[in-house]
Image 1 (cartoon, one colour):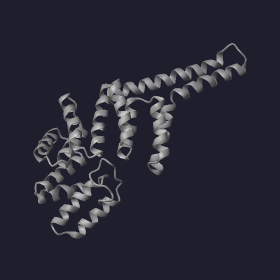
Image 2 (image 1 turned 120 degrees about the vertical axis):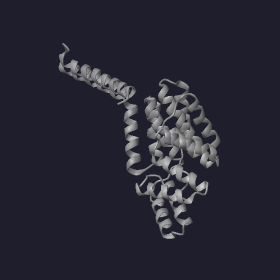
Image 3 (image 1 turned 90 degrees about the vertical axis):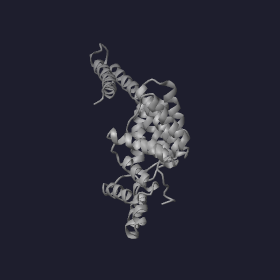
Length: 268
């Protein structure tokens, strides 16, 4: 477990331990039972108040998992942010909003994280999420600029490689895309999105045989995003395998789309 994550868990555990100790200590107060109970209730209420943001977060996460995004979910998650959850959880809320069409609301949260800069790593995560917000708006150049600046600052991870290649490919900048793909391969960034980026690159350069091989292997692993199946369908169709192309498009329709995907459900 990374040190920063362990540190957060230790802090959370320490706060909980303090309140448990305070509640337990009321048993030994030299007062009558009613006062002891009242003291315990007060300590418990304070604890709940301080942790209310995470309770809102948990509630919102449960709702979106059970029934999908809704205004009720967004209001609940916004309450979590307003109550003072950590930058890590704010990033999760912001990205969830961005991926589900609430881009402006997500950007507001990200700007708050970046401006405060209380946790440098989460600030960089927020910058990556900001690039995804630009991508959701189809501003590929601005999204790429954010990611390029992150790389210049020494921050790179699998998502920065995935998104930067995606931005270049979506903007038709094939030479830049190739450079990112080669560097990602050198860094052993072998995610499903990078494989899809590779297939997309081969399609755009007319290397259909290589595209089909990469994409066929990819969809065999049942990736969760629809773009891979659409690209696989394009390669299948190019080689005249209409039945397989339609099958892959059917798989694409069964996947949930997000604003950060290349294709919308209407397009598919």
